[in-house]
Image (cartoon, rainbow, N blue to C red):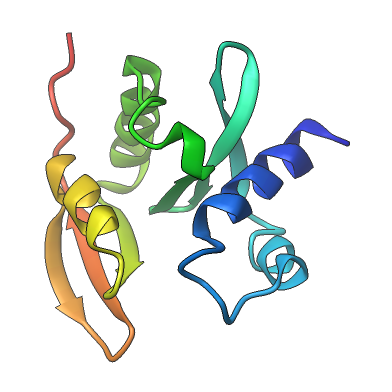
Length: 128
């Protein structure tokens, strides 16, 4: 299996409990034209950072939650901010851990619809 596909598969495992409406095939198709950056722990792919223009999403398998974020992850945020001046993401309203994680990274909620909260970030956190 290609690295990109493995990263997407692990990312799908991370959203599957919350996304009963999306099949794995639909997930792969939805992100077919996105940049897929594998998330690794001890050289094992556990998820993906998904980037398209100024939009970013992160998903890791259930076992890796809270264990994966590193300084290099913030470099991706810096790259997007430098290129677009903003970073956007969204999360299902029902995913409380998602909102906590997004807000902890400094994203601000901009609006909502029936299914999602939408967030935006215009400054990157200083990481040492």
